Image 1 (cartoon, one colour):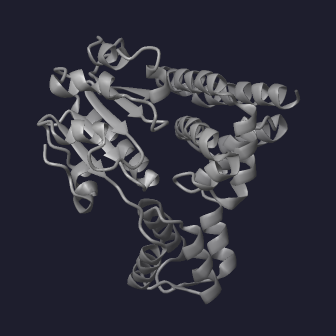
Image 2 (tube, rainbow, N blue to C red):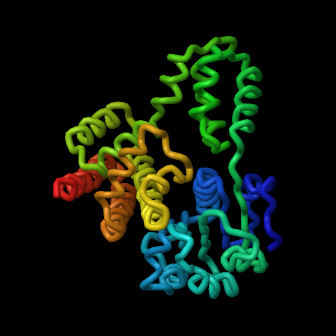
Length: 345
């Protein structure tokens, strides 16, 4: 498969070719990599009449079992549907090429594999493996600049006949970050809130952009992983009252745990503060202290166990959707208890 150009990346992942069964998404825009991987998995799963069985794996899980992906790709799924494996590379030093090469060269009949990686230089073994195969695709995603996001903001708002006070516009551009997909969704949400012909104040922009469900989930996740049990219980009650999705919360927690594993690897090389500052997608400044604290509390092995428990909770919510809130609450409270116990040592 010819390497996909960055300008074609979004279109390619929105309409993936039927003859491609292995996808590598990589680049400096880790927000886009994660977002488009999720979209790709959803589209590919919907193509399976029985609904694909999605398996999330971190690259650290392959160090002691390099054949796991091949085993999963050829396994008969308990709940029907072909296996759809989502592999996240947590550390550039994790060599997953030996695990993936047999599958790229001789793809399994039904399984699909989506790999998420950081920036890969031209000629990197993993990138070259996918670019050189007729059965695979390598898809790059690169960050927009702050100027690009500012241009996007200044074009979308007038198109919707929405104006923003100068201070509010400055705040918005700064807090949208450089992830174009996330920025677009936040602007769309702001437009929906404002309505045609409205002018938004700084207070309104701060409220809408600063208190999305995703950001409330971020706060709950940080409190969980630092052992703030009382606040976790209160946040869970509020989310239940708001009708927020427990499944979305668990998925967000799983992604955050994967990110923490990657930050641990970076921290060993560059130090804790530098690793947190380099996080992709970038962390809101209000979260950085909590993330640093979580990294001090959770060891690599503890993070792997935490991911396994969240994976199990996600599976349980699918089997017992009527109990999804109770399942999610129990899973998070258990993690909060672990964090509090370790944090007090």
